[in-house]
Every structure is written in C-alpha cells, then in structure tokens.
Image: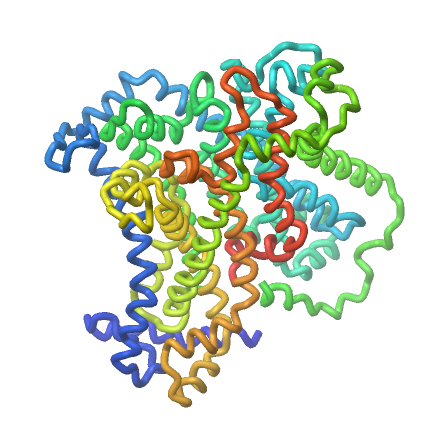
Length: 319
Length: 304
C-alpha cells in the first residue's frame, strides 16, 4: 500500500545523533530552519511538555518523595521530617481500612476482568457480524459510556435505595443496597460493570473491524468453525487491542473512585485505595506523608500496567 | 482508521460465504439475546427518566412498581434546589477553555512530533501517553499543595490561589487530556503526505504557517472526534472538581448533584430529575455526534 512509502524518510533515525545541538532537527528535509522557526518549534513542544511535567510528572515524583516524610502540610517545606519507611509500616500494620481497600480493588479488577471485559468482547464479536439492528444494539450497550461514573451512582440509586428502590419494591426486601457493608460493594460493581461493558465492546468492535476479512474467509474455506476461527485466528491477531483492553480494565479498576465517593465517600464497605488517599488529604486530618504512601502504592501498581501499555503502543508506533 | 478499512479488496473469492439472511434458529436466538441485553442496558436510564416525571407523594403511597403521578415539578424543583443555572455556567467556564486549550496544545505538540524526527520524540510521546493513564489520586497530594501555594491575582480567582479556582481545574484537565490527544493527532499527522510541507517550505512558509494554515485544516476529522470526546470527558470529570474546588458555588454540574440529597431524607424522584438534567448535554452529544464520539474513542486504541 502507498502509505508505507511515506514512513520511509524516518530511516534517518538509524543514523548516529548529530550531537547535542539543543534539539536541532536532523531530518534532511528541513534544510533551513530560521531562528524564528526554532523559537516557534521550541514553544510548540515546550509549553505542553512544561504543563504535563508540572502537573503530572512532578506531582508523581513528589508523591513518592513525600511518602517518606511526616508533614502536616500546613507549615513550610522546612517543617518536613524524614522518617524513612514508617508510613509504609503504618499503612500495612496499623491502618484497618487498608486491607479491605486492597481487597475491594482486587475484587473490582476481578469482576471487570473476568466478567465485564469478556462480556464486552463477546458482545463485540456478536455485533461484528452483519445483523439487522446491529446499530440499535450497539447504541444501547454503549449509551452508559457517555455518562459520568458519578452520575451512574445516582442513576443506580433508584434501584438500590432501601425505601424508594426498585429492587426492594419488586422483591419485598428491605436491604439498603448502597448502605449495607455486606452487599454494597457488589451493588457498586454491578453499576460499574454496566458502564464498562459498553466501553470494552466499543474498543473491541473497532479492533475487529480492522481485521483483514480475507483472514476469516480463508479460515472459513478451510472449514474452521466460527469459534475456532475466533480463538485461533482473530484473537491472536488482535493482540495489540487485547493488551489495550487489558490495561484499560486494570486502570479502571485502580482508578475507581467516583462511584464510591458519591455513594458514601468510600467508607463502610466501599473502601478503595483511591478513596483512602483522598480522605487523607481533604478530610479532617491531612496526613500528607501517610496519604502519599498510599498514593505511592497506587502509583507503583499502575506504573506496571501503564508501562506495558506504553511499550505496546510505542512498538506499534515504530512499525 | 481509514488505512485499515481500505484494505478489503478480495474480489477473487466469489463464493458467497454468508448465506442470504434466513430466519434460522441460531439467528432468532441471537436476536432475542441481543434484544434482551439492549433493553437491560437501556433500562436504568429509562427508569431514571420515567421516575423523574413522577410525583414523590404518589410513588411513596403506591410504591415504585406502579404507574401514574405524572408531573414536571421535579424538574422545576431540581433546577432550583441544585442551582443548575449557576453550575451549568461553571461547567461551561471549565469545559470550553479546557477543551480548546487541550486541542491547541496537543496539536502543537503532535505537529512537532510528527514533522521532525528528534531522537527524543518517542520517549516524549511515551511520557505523554503515560501521563494520561496515571490514577489521578496518586498525584493529588503534591498537586493540592502546589495549587494552594500558587497565588493568583484577585481578578483571576477570588480565592487568591489556584486552589478553588476555575483556572486550576482548566489546567489540570488540560494537562491530563493533552497526552491522549497528542497521541491521536500525531498519528494522524504522520499520515499526511510530506510533499505538502515541502511545497510549503519551498514557498518560504514559516513553521507556524505550515502548522496553522497547512496542517490544522487537514486535521479536521480527528479534531472533531477529539473535541466531542473531550467535551464529554471534561464535562463528566468528577475527581478534580471534588478535591480542588471547595466552595460549593464553583462546582461544575456533575458535582452539584449532591445538593439534591437531603441530610436525612432524599427524594429520589428529584434526584432522578437532576440526573437527567445533568445527563442531557452528554446524551445530546451522544446522539447528535455519535460518529465522532465513537471515532474518538477508538482512535486512541487503533493505530492511525
């Protein structure tokens, strides 16, 4: 295909770098770069980079650093005491909500990973065929994706409320689905999965559309069943999408916050790491070091998956 | 996207692989299954809409599994109680500048990344992509402190700092979303023919003109998709608005729904009306710009 020709000039990348000339474009195609242009290029990449570094990268690093400190956050930076790993010891041994929060995050991940994500993929596979009304089915399933998770929490309250909820109305029970710490995590997970399925379906559907039909046709000619074709041919070809879907699932499970925060600010059966971090900062007692230790744990877990994602995507990029 | 879909040109297979649509049993089962799923997925929203039009007195007497008690009063009450006029304006003040700024900055960045081959291009792109995926909560503590320490003049923020100001929310949303948009846009820009820039070069066009007058007009499709998506995302953003804004009168709509909950008692029909009001802008986007929305979501996942 003609597109490949365009990529070739990048072959210049293989050459040794021209030396540290402060970012002089090395591409042969740019012969004369005037001083004004250089300033423009510098600003065009400098400003966005500065913003991302200041508001994302720097805070991420600062979180790790502060996790080794004791600080009430009110005094100046001089009042910071360095206490080594004491915050971590406290998180693991002396902080009751931590264990449930970890469990809930893992449960969240398990439900999304083993139920919601496969179901979304399954729907995508079904809807990828030419069937009548496919558009209606798709629209219905991904409608929740445009709603914020906070709003999802409110919408599902109409099912879960003890006195005014549909579930109790139908079953004649008197369970407070959002309030009872034995069931509320499941209630929230149903609501969260409701939205997640549509998101995954959409991503996967796009992936399936990108598959060369001749692959499937060849399999069909060889007499492979549809199931076999999917698992042995389509699924492996979709490897990049699979990884993206996996990472999105993990990140969603880790970032889960809005839903539990609107229900009860992440207490009483709905503890999540993200909610604990938030409670430690904006709550009554702002325990900067301790909250940072929690945040660092979160950051480390997410970085494992984020880097997997980035490596996958960048490899695609280099091709 | 377009490069992938252009591929099917397999004219040599002339046996119809799919039998003409007949109502076979598997097909009926498939449709029944999909219909059930679709209705089940629509039901929560439909239920909220339905009950938003019902009187609380009626539903509390007859129970929710009933019909009747139709009223529009919930909408009137919800609008007043949650002060939606003010909060919708807040959402506009935050969303519009944040989306414009995100698109502008990421186009700039993407242009440089796509147009030149600096050796730090890939690491930079990787950094931007990663920044978009980190859990916001893990950055909260330093950001919160930073925001409290950065002074803003009175005319920009009555709180005197970035904390509790629209500016703070605009900046943090922009910083978070720029990564994703840069990634999508730079992929798109790489597919533009290089001859365009060479021609512009020969004409003596500056880098800025090559960007603003040659490249951007060609990037309308991804920009439209991203704009749709980003408006939805930033409008829906909840976490930063919850923690970085402390006075109720600056909350965007998504965070203002809480006003509808009483301390001891909550009228859920009222909450439903509020939820529908908050959902309307995103639903309008969803139905009117569905194509762009879907394209935007899948652009990031699919190369090009």
